[in-house]
Image (cartoon, helix red, strand yellow):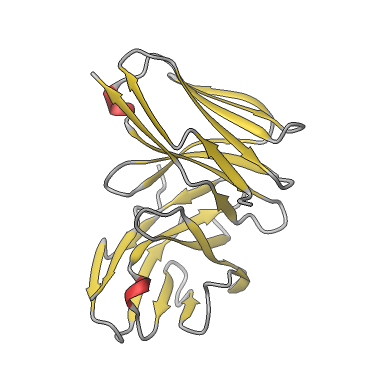
Length: 110
Length: 109
């Protein structure tokens, strides 16, 4: 069964550093998403991506964040100058009406 | 007001009990999702509904579009069902999901 994969599973970084979270969506899907879940809180939408561009972004997704599809398979979320409050679980998903989630990357900013 | 409200927030049951988790939403949707999240953090999609009822094993999900309400039922609950169950809604305009806060289910042996 096809699945969404994410790397790394856990990333620890120091405040102010840049991180790149990687996702490989399901190959024939056209819509991709990043969601975030701060510990103890609900999952929040960050950004959706279609046809090689952002289709929608939340107010959380400010200039600190960027997404790319650098090749035919990877979908990345870059967080510049990380802050303590960026510590969260980041989920990638792909699909349209039915979305498939990756296992998540736990980002810890110290 | 949250767009997606779940109840209860926490639920403890004895093994074998019938479980119901409710979800109400306030916006027009194209689909409603029930998701399961285990302590490790990963999210698994259980159901996607746009109308009626779906069944998979011991899990049943129903939706009433007019009343903007959905329920997830677990029959003959088991300790391995212990997890957070999350309701999320999507709209046809952009497919992004809006999530509820989740229901923490604990099933005791």
